[in-house]
Image (cartoon, rainbow, N blue to C red; front, side, top):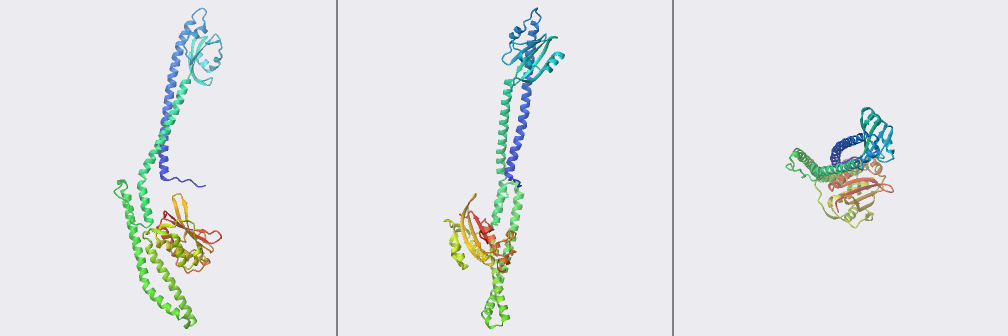
Length: 455
């Protein structure tokens, strides 16, 4: 099961939102409980005061010879939220003749009133929250007053929803604050990423502004020093490769000229000497190709020289240059003007065609198309061959320098330098693109070049 990995910005925003939600929810819960406790306690005190007053009225009326308990209850000002019941000599009395409300008085509360003289209990009566206050008037008489808390319950519900909305708003504000913070905090990281991307594309002049953010001065200084050292190292290696390749050219040309003389007179030599002369000529040609590739690698670290290029025409010329059928070039789009480095892209096509001849039984198709992607149109070049394909294990290393796939012997001769595909990868990277190897439908290999931002 693949675990979802969130980006740094998403994690920071989520952290701000979670922190704000936790804090606001805690404060809302505490506020709600304090408000609820205070309101209910106040309402209970008010209920006790009202019940005490009503108890005095009923107690005074009981001192007559023939007390009218129902009339005394009806004379009480109970409003619409309170209900008074009197238990006298084993009988219940209320405002109305129906005393069914007596079933709402818990036995536990009745026992508490009988033993202590007074009691209070919160419960639900007829589906509504209520407070019942009981007061003992005489050993045979007790008053019970039911105070309904409908308005209080509705008020608490409203307060609860308001606090929930406030907590949600605070969480949203926290997420907005996190988004704002990450936009500014991660801006230096975007600068580092842009500089690193430029360096990857071959622009070794990319640097960070050390005075832009004092808190990141050390990072900027270290990054710039690293790039300086890398630039010096790359330049040193490039000069070394270029100097060595240049110095090899003169003696190599002399050897090639001498070998060509031997090759032209091969029919005058004995068989053993003729075979040796042929081997010398072949190896010198391979040596010449290796030197040319080394010189190309030495120049490959330089930035791409971009210009509008008709890539369809460039592909046809590369195919004709290698004496293949121009009909294998297939143009899948009318947008053939791409902004690329003409020399590099032509070298990419030539190297892939040569690789198809050397290891893949020859090229069978060259596709030039444009595909739609999330970031915009992508220029795509594909070269198909008719060989056995490239094994999945080789696809990870086939573009490294001096690496030839383990199946190269099966795909053709083994006379390559091991630098052709490395040059392809280097030239494509200079354009900010990528190269990969796929299986061609019907058999063979498909080398695919993707160049974003060239249209």
